[in-house]
Image (cartoon, rainbow, N blue to C red; front, side, top):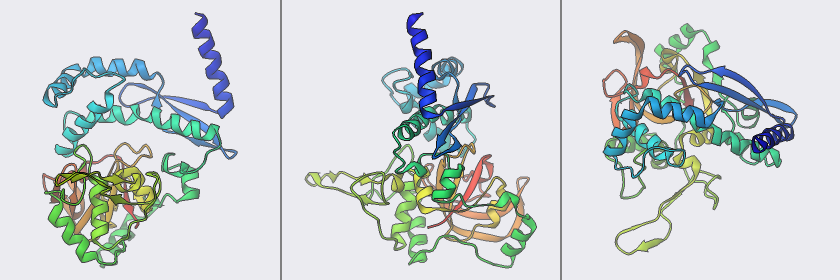
Length: 357
């Protein structure tokens, strides 16, 4: 009882010291969640939605999904059953299953759970940096829809407030809004087509559980974009094979976060526009466009890909109307039109983005 009392006192003091407050809500997954708010440079900012009681909701999740989790453990030879200590192993393989089933597998609810579960660790990092007034790189940690991020690097134009008929008219007139400007667009597209299904493992590392940003970074480099190299992983946009350690076998690959992580890549490159409407999104896409998706619209970009071709006329595909576009992407690895069964971009329910470069 004494320990619990001391913990409560500590939490109160810590909250006061960091100017934290909380807004509680019920998530659509029937888990209790809250949105922490923190004072940054005299202005309140929302952090990522997180579970009100991380351990309790985790236990509930495990009980509910124990059959699927056991299947994952056996299929991928994970040594231990899921726990607070090894949950990332399970998240990675579930994401792999999810991506390979084009966003429509039975693992969707588990993906949504982990999307919230990992937010506590992001929030803790943000809170700690703000506590010690360390604002370097904070714009790459806070939710992308926060005012702080908008002031530092911009959030992109919100197309949800724009008349879609105007956007569609511009599209059908062939007016290009491609945000990506590359020294050699044809080389970028050729690279994307060549290595979409068969990763270029001779030159680059391949992230089996999530290679989307790494692949788009390779496409940009093939298109003539020069790396911005730093020693620190949290700075710049770069990749190197490092030093050879085993002769005639291989070398150690090193990557900046902006090179290999979707959320950091999108923020580093910048956002031209966003929308929650897929038809509006498709109307802004042209050959050579970098596209991104935030699956749960929580301010964390989950996926990024490259468009190698696009249609200028809106059609009805399986009851959904949009301008078709051909995507080259990794995890899952495919080169396919959105109208095909292999591609799943039209099924995303969150937020879309057109990425600058």
